[in-house]
Amino acid sequence: MYFKRFKRYIFLLFAILFFQSAQAQFLGEIGLLGGVSYYNGDANSTTPFLENHPAAGALFRIQMHPLLMLKLDVLHATVSGNTENFPNALPNGIQAEFKRSFLEIGMQLEVNFFKYGEETWDREVLYHTPYILLGPGLAVYNDMGGNSFAPHLAFGVGYKYKLWGRWNIGLEWSMRKLFRDDFDVTDFSNEILNNPYGVKSSWLKNNDWYSCAFAFVTFDIIRKRGKCIETKW
Image (cartoon, rainbow, N blue to C red; front, top):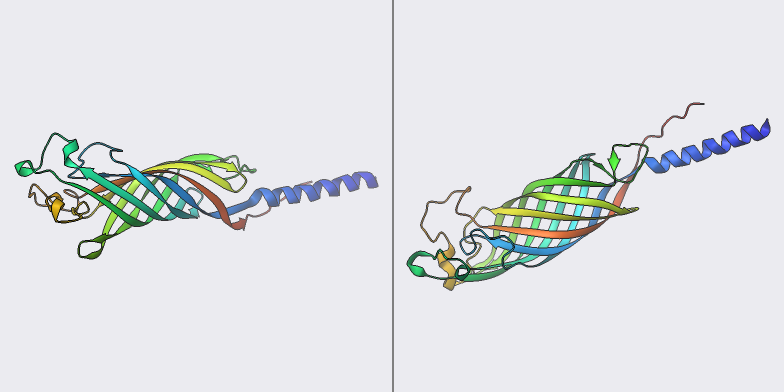
């Protein structure tokens, strides 16, 4: 009789510990990213991943909802372009090229396709998920007249995988729609790249783009414990 009670207490203790561990959630991630960046604009109108350059930075994610993450990133990247790579020349046959390094500060809302995390009693939680992202950002760079800022809107897709414990890895590709057309103007030799055809500009057209494709590794932080599940006997 006492042995049976002892086994019941031991089982109850392990059940409590198991459910407490299973319900432990992490609401944030911090990590590093690295990959390539490239440009689309008047000096590269169509071709992706042309003249790509190394890009690296750091990111921070915070959970807003089981399917929503808010991500902040800081990224150092470089883009370049050369009109000689394309058959359609600028007016009067002028050729131009540029190269620019910049710092990006971005904030995106990520929408996971599935609940993401370590395996728990909740079978809806998976160790991997694709996601989409959307959000504003700012490119900061040194222009001819000093420091300049180029606001943009980023959108893209990604995939992340729970590697082990609190470690995550993933891939992401996103495009940045800039709200100015002179991002590719670095000096007087390539000023023509600022609206070379003289078409009336708007925030939807005649503006430059750049894209980033990278891999990332993150570590879970900001621990939160869920409610303990009642065990019936």
